[in-house]
Image 1 (cartoon, rainbow, N blue to C red):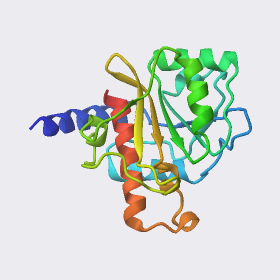
Image 2: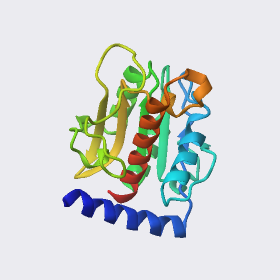
Image 3: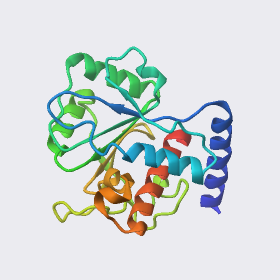
Length: 217
């Protein structure tokens, strides 16, 4: 009964959002040498899937921003991925902290290779916060689609289980870090990784769950 109530609240909320504004994703263009632009077809495919399978209206293309851009406050859903090094300036650290504390949500998805630098840089943003691994029964795994086993494993990297890690402010998630899952690869065009349809569907559905959760939490 509880999950049904949550689902109805979610649906009503997103219906209201879809009528008043168009959902968008802003990819963060960071420095340090990492390929912030990786998986170029991933976000458009996720946004297409969101529009086709939920009541939410979404922009069909991603926005690309730097953390010091004046319009960062206009992008409540921020996304970061890549394989290599991330380096945030002092101004970017302050800007990201301000955006997240003012209501923005960051989803960081390790595309294999950004883990060490991302943890280092996000610690500068929130030095007094530590990542908490979300349990399989957390609401993010039931916000639209049901994932009984938690975060899906899309691509194998180091034979580690997938982890959904979060930084909280009270009960609100400010940052979701998906590690050893590689959702972005699952969102890419089918021809890029030649993944089975079931695996790609799993990645896309989890992406929808993350978006829905960010809207209703």
